[in-house]
Image (cartoon, rainbow, N blue to C red; front, side):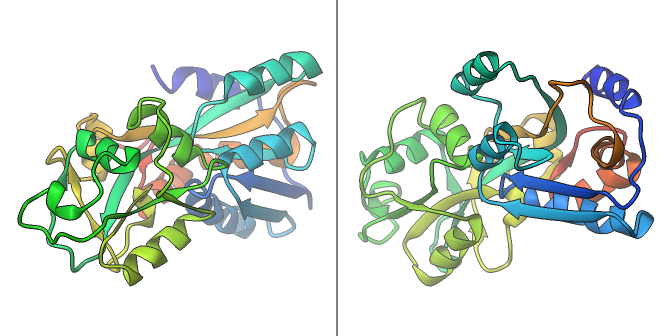
Length: 274
């Protein structure tokens, strides 16, 4: 049922790429799979030019308003303020769910912790808990260094809404402009903690279980992992459904081949693959 509306709309996205330029901006989380789609798409359509930029979900949606992108990648749903702006400007954006993602909680590999709860995450990021031994008495009495994406990030928006329940992050939380910056900081700081899209998990950091559930494809797909969300591509349909290279690229992204690429970067496919 989740795929019916999208498949129906995609069937209406007629048109083929003929040397067109496609601009994609937005979510750092969606970036890895969008990049794979672009590479595979260009093999099929060698004349197509595709530009991809990952600078946060809000940046992508803002670019869609300004006519500076064809597709806005987003790891969050559109905000009420953005809906109001659409109404004010007479614009109409359509979302496509392209994948699902679990938000992984990551720490330095040398820190002897394996699991964390959602309440403990709230306590750390709200400033209620400030040292690791407050989480577990066997951990060192060292100050926790909490890291976060900045407020242009859809991952930030989701974390604040679903983990922080809308409450603000503590002043000591360091906000960074990219997921890669979070990973690098955690690699360098034994007492740091951060949250990233699970497609960015590497051997350089340790991904914790959350409520004793691992951030895996199977656990996100089943709904067992407690911090997961859909990933979107938004397009401007103010003057009708997109055609040409935009429609063609979206069809490819949601095809069996495109959805297989979702699995290859560690996310969960939205459609078509069991």
